[in-house]
Image 1 (cartoon, helix red, strand yellow):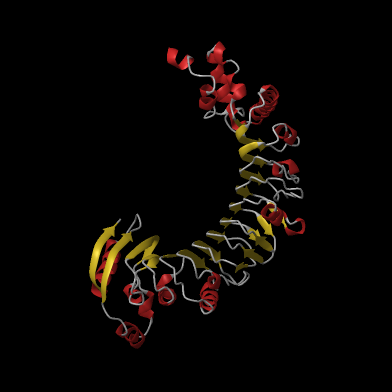
Image 2 (image 1 turned 120 degrees about the vertical axis):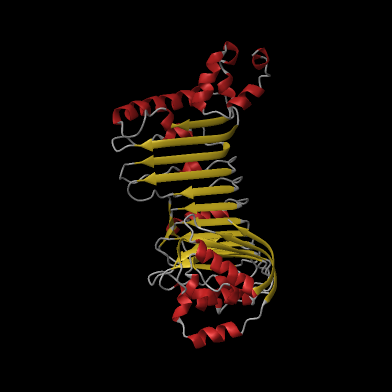
Length: 434
């Protein structure tokens, strides 16, 4: 252990930065030489679960743990040296009986770190208001804010945004109110912001506009108004909405390379109206379901230009047993498509669609867990089936076919599909069956 005790003074704080702050303080008890080493650690990590007993159900232990947690937090912030922070992490769980969260303790460090994570969960039903100082950190490059509350989402009102170095912002469980232009304040006053992630937020905003934003993810956000997204530098767009949705409008997507769109298109949801703005993408993942998805998709496809750069296409959640013609439509609009992934709920004549893409090299068929043996196309008349199959000719070559079976797989059904492919494709370079 002598070599460990002889470490240079600047190395030990770096090693301690990989521990939680509580663990770092305890480690310094091992040696008098290390006694004050924790005060120079450039990382602060506070987690109430380190103090809260076995679980939040043990109320008395949790209450005692909260008291110790606040005292420890206060003591660390009071006694640490004024070294620049690389990371600040704060996790708290507020029970029904607790008083308001003490944001002033966090304010003591002014979140002047390069990376900050603030995670708060609470059972209280009153509104939680977040302080402005969270968005007033001149050195902050990465901010992750996760709030889980029993009733409603806290509203952030960053009127005076001052985070000039912010590159990544990740928000969960926040109400973003357009009247106060929360989103636009972040976009316009963060000149180097490259990545924005919004999870389970109330998205009451009419516009998300940025000249520098490169990645945008909107996941499980409720939406009360149609939102326009205008980001000419955007390279990656993910929109997965399962909540109330009024729709999105995409503008200035000339740099977009990757897009993943997943919607539940029922009668009470907005129009799709997205594909016509995705003509430059090289990778597209599309998952649609609901009573109106086919009608709205057909309307949107009719407005599309050719997907001239599309190399990878993934289609999931569709009932492809009935809507393979929509896949054919995509293949016709994608002259450079080389990699196609389909998620199937039933065995269908997939090869019927492959003839429409001369560039396709790799086909992946991923079966759902509940795989049906029946083929809905059998409900068509023999004349309709004959007309559909007579237009096909045998495909010359497919480089790779990858079939992913469900855990409880009906082998007969999968074998039927493989035989069908071999009938339509003269040469399959590699067959991978998982």
